[in-house]
Structure formats: C-alpha cells, structure tokens
Length: 414
Image (cartoon, rainbow, N blue to C red; front, side):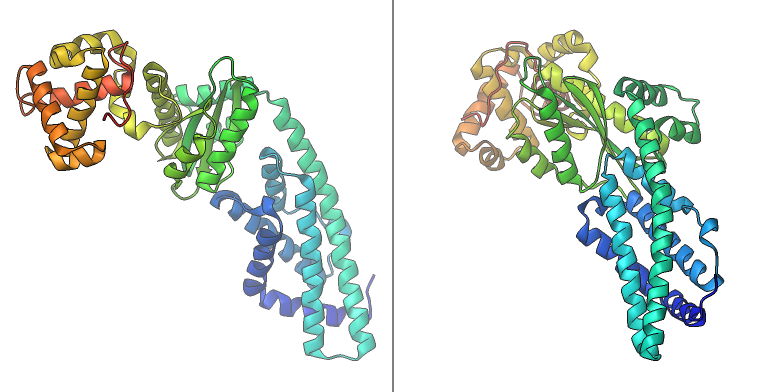
C-alpha cells in the first residue's frame, strides 16, 4: 500500500544508493569487528561482501521501486554465504545477528540523511518509521529463508559421514580424468584457488585423541589466520586443508612452538599449490611427509619441503640402508659416537666447510668440530670432499628415515 511519505522514502534510499560504495564497506567492517565468526579467509570474505552488497541492493530496490514483500527472496550470494556458514560449522545465531546489526545501521543512515534533508519533524519521524518498518519486514522475510537454507545445508553436510568425505577426497586425488567442476561438486568446496594440506595424528594409546586433533586444528587456524576444512579419518587421524584465493602464509615457527605443548600430536604439511592439480599435489606432499615422520619416528611438525628428498625413498628403506652403508661405511654405526659424528659432518657440510659456522650451529668449540671431522674422514676412508653429494644424501636419509635402525637421535651433539 502506498504511503504519503513514499517520495521522501525514495529520496533517502536514492541518497544511500549513491553513497553505497562508501557505506557498504563500513557495514562489512562492523560485522568483522563485532562478530568473530565473520573473520574469514579471503575466499569466504568475498562471499560475505557479495552477500552484504546484494542484500543492500535488494533493500534499496524495494524502497525506490515499490517492490512488494511477496516478491522478496533470499539473494543468491546471501544464500550461498549461509550454506558456507553451515559447512564451516559457524553458528546460525551469528549469521542472524549480522542481519539485525545491519538493519540497525541502515536505519541510522536513514536518520542521518533525514537530518540533512531537514523536513518537518513529523514528516521526518513518519518517514523514519516507514523505512524501519519496510527494512524490518525485508529482514524478517530473508531470515526466514536463510534459516531453512542454513539448517538444510547443515543436515546435508552432517549426513555426509567423515568416512564418505575421506573417500571423496581420495577419489578426487586418484581420478586424474576428473574435471574441476565435478571435483568441486563432490567436495562441496571451491578448488580454483590455493590449497595447503595437513595431516594430523596421535599415537595409539593417546588419552582423548580427538581432543588433541581438535587442538591441532585450532593451532593451524591460528598459524594461517584461516578457517580450515577437516575430515576425521579415524580416532587418531585427521585431514585438514586450507583453501584461499591468495597463497596461504603459515607461521611455521609459531606452529612448531605451539605443538610442544601437545607431545602426543604430530602434523605434516604439504606445500601450497593452486587449482585441482595443486589440491592433489599438496595432499600427496602431506602424505609423503607423514610417511617420513613415521619411518623416522619424528614427532611434532614435519614440513614436506624439509623432507622431500627422503620422501622419495620412504618406501625403499631396506635398499636405502644398504646404499647408505656403502657410502658411509663405519660412519653408519648405530652407537652414540657414530651418530654424533654424522650430525657434526652434516652441519659441517651444510656450513659449506666452515668449522666456525658448524661449531656455532652445534654449540661446541671449533676444535671439537675439527676433531670430529677428522675422525669421520677416518671412518669414511676418504676426505669429505670426495663423493660429497653421496655423503650428504646418505646423511640426510639416515637422519630423516631413522637409519640405521638402532640409531638414537642426538640433539645438539656436544
């Protein structure tokens, strides 16, 4: 039904629409500041921005074009944002709170503009009341639709068991002829940006392993500043991946440090990569790093980038042990002395033959490095400069794959 104040309502809506490029980011910033669940990664944030802008445009069209409430539906971007909210396990209450906060801000904009237009007081009050009533009716109708969308998606998402999700991820990894659209449909997520996979696990006998896995997921979220996707493989294993428009930036030093508070939790990380092939590769990276960690009995954080070479040999440990023994000879001994010499030689070669730098890395005196290098050369039967590449690879394999089997790791090797 028409209202005597509709011309002024349209005038106010027109002013807001003309200034929407400034006002819309203000509302979005308010959501992010006030509601923690709205602090998304780049991809989901773009969806949140599109949802906000589409709702504002629909409200302004309703006010300026006299669109009836019966014709109001949930904007597509807002519907998709609600689905993503449900997929990430974010609360419906937070989503609905944003709509009410947005409604309040819109009414405040209206009051500010009416003060600038300065109509008679009774006209201003009536116009403000009319705008508030229309916006409230819009929000009520859209919220009703959003609740259905959110709850339907939550039921659908929960109905997909973790075992099914894991099987779908494996299918996407293994089916080389699968196109990106089909893969996205299977996983219900975008595969067109950047991805980084992590594998989390706890050893058998861990008390409350699921709590440890949840803690690890939280640490990854803190280290990346993004909300990860998760799959419970079983009670002791979880897959986690980060998807974003920009290349994921992970604070590995912080993550490694935080992991020390969880001695029964280990995490391997694949290298960031893009697109469907990148999704597959970072998964394989994390899996290969896990193989190295289990073979070498490593704990805590293991990056694929640090163990990529050893990962190539993780499935051929017996052959690598035979080869490494041929290269290293008596330096391959399983006692603490041989292990200490291997650590020293590795540091010396990594320091490009600098006794001073190697001593600083090992926290020992330079003369100690001199002595151990000479002793190692005696055991090798030749100077370190001979077959240097073979020696370096053999030392790396020993350290990362736990060869020889009886080797006890030596820390700073004093």
